[in-house]
Length: 191
Image 1 (cartoon, rainbow, N blue to C red):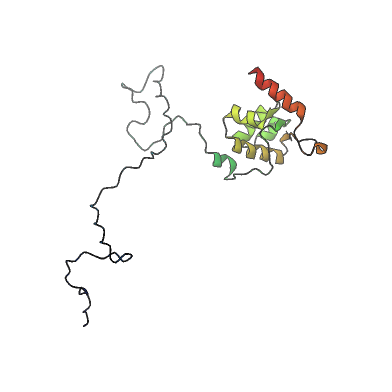
Image 2 (cartoon, rainbow, N blue to C red):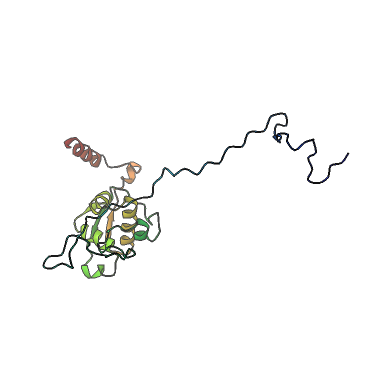
């Protein structure tokens, strides 16, 4: 007995389909169509800048419209001041030198040597006229720590800053200085 192509080999077409992995088990019922749910993750919304104040001494007409006037596609006139970290580092994620967060940075670079540098490089050099640690630079400039490490390593390579790594004494096997640890501990206790 042969079955023609397209015909049901085991009887009527009204039999329930058979599960190929467990032939004796009944096939599961198909679920009704459900529209996709909204994702729980919402896109990042940057903080809104305060609305611009009306210009003094004669505005542009009545109403608090301000900038834009219905163009819709124009960007706001106030810059956000936010630069993506990968834009500052050129896409690099690791510094050329391993810098500890307590490494001290100082600069003696003259202002004319800073003219061709990135704004972040200039800010670091101006800040490091007094000796600062990598962690302090990160906190004071509100730049992520990893980005600061990369930028400081770039500045050291260009000869614009000097890095004073907190190295342990070679005779001590690379262990940190005990007096430094005691000073840190006493400073923490004063807090």
